[in-house]
Image 1 (cartoon, rainbow, N blue to C red):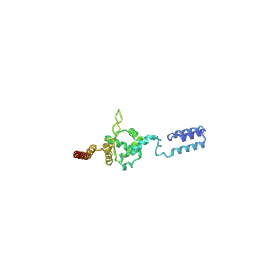
Image 2 (image 1 turned 45 degrees about the horizontal axis):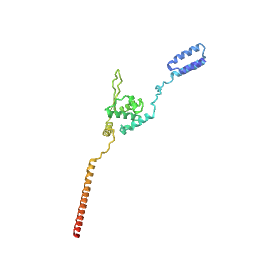
Image 3 (image 1 turned 90 degrees about the vertical axis):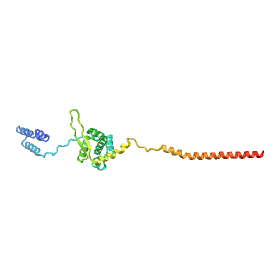
Length: 238
């Protein structure tokens, strides 16, 4: 029974605690609580645990990802499809990373650079904090952006300043910004020169009025001539 407890202790104890378990084993053997065969088997088990290869890396702690709600997925797709990145640059990033960089580009077009904190960008793009960091890190590695790390003060944390330095991306942002500045948020409506149409309508109506006047004048003259003839006939009869 005591040998089984020591065996469980050997299997569960971390490597640094194995010498303590071995000391406990030999004390139990000296007290006659374990047999020689059991002590030899447990000793071999302890030695096997000691020489077992150490894992190269600590097991990764499972980290929960950002909940993929319908609203966050919609924001992610909308930002990724907003056209804020040139197609050849967007092809180097995942959908979520492209959404992050689209937010950075939008803020840069408005303010000249992006000073939003990581949590703010993540909330806008509908992604997690790690995705924001990975996207900016990869864009920095590719030479697309620079990241200025501002000194932290005692009262508040200052966000990093992300600036777009890629000439291709800058030119693309100018092309995207130009139509928006022309529209000003309102759909452009083609104007019509109503004054010119009115003048043209007046000019077109003038010949009609003139012809009508001429026709009226002709009718009046004809009526006068008929009256004169009738008057002459009456005089001749008399």
